Amino acid sequence: QVQLVESGGGLVQAGGSLRLSCAASGSSSSIVTMRWYRQAPGKQRELVATITSGGSTNYADSVKGRFTISRDNAKNTVDLQMNSLKPEDTAVYYCYCNARVLPGLRAYWGQGTQVTVSS
Image (cartoon, rainbow, N blue to C red; front, side, top):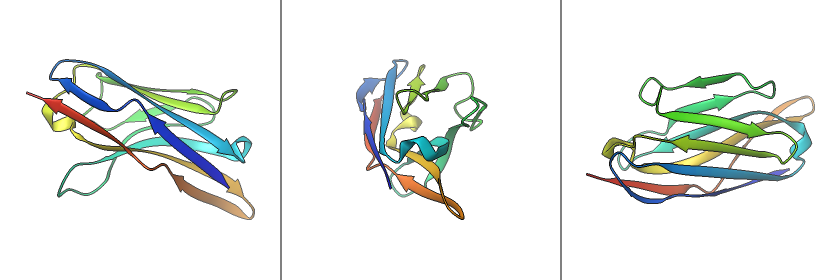
């Protein structure tokens, strides 16, 4: 089992920055990929950023150049630095990971943290 706890959400003006953090506990040594998703009111949950155990990253087109995902495997944390925030970035942001649970992988989610960007 892996537990994920997010922190760092809040209210910020457009153009501002926020840094989200996610701490993993439990069987965190088995974690493979970590991601951030977000879900705005009335919309489907969407993938924002991915980082693999080797440090490879990928971003949604809507956040490229503004958001940066990073990972500390020793501390079992994943962060999302969000710059140049826009009102359309307003959403609940969720930390996600998949971990080795033989014979395959199992997905885990955090509880979410609210990010609100005012215009």
